[in-house]
Length: 257
Ligand code: SAH
Image 1: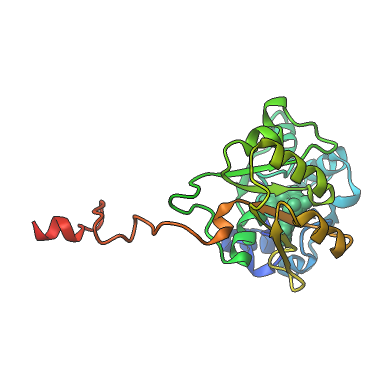
Image 2: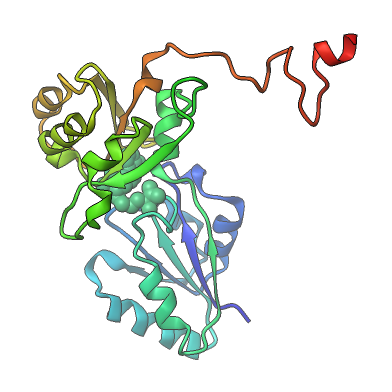
């Protein structure tokens, strides 16, 4: 029987959790949530008497002790992460520690902040003729970056980029992107706290954005979106092109022949 659920809580707005994630939180005996980023309003879904832990002040071992103890007592555990837990969620080490103990678990995906940022920007990341690729990455912090994934190398593709965990190193982000080949007039958007009531968007180019960020002061929880998709000059999608047949709809050309 599954007793542990890793749940993506979404980017902030408590309505952006999945129906399944919300149900599992409402049924859990023990809830461990990543308090530094998960909106505490999510806790309103907990059942009365649920045991609630904020993992911001816990080590991996602490989390495992609480989880294993609860499982041993026949309880269910909701481990709640921000966005989707597969993206910079540090869930692999937790899942891998449960396996040898024979503890069954499931993962419930969530809305990652890079997608909530697209929604905030009212922006498609994959525009025909501009970019059909989205690169999710970050600048090196305490976690080292594999050499081949340096931002300047990834920049060579000039795809749409969503850069996590890096707004506090904006000068370095810009330097690496330009070094990699993006032109200085490439549009950049910074989405601060996407989907929260105090969501804010800063826009500029690689030439101006570092100063704009500096003027804003301390920024927490921001997504850096880079690429020419933000520029507004693109070809129309083939999906809705009258001349273009696809599996579910014959094109006008095909019909008339
Ligand atoms: N698993 C999370 C990411 C955790 S790493 C997800 O899928 O979104 C934390 C980083 O995510 C932050 O530094 C920031 O870059 C980004 N982030 C998280 N929530 C955000 C939000 N509401 N708006 C913008 N960026 C956010």
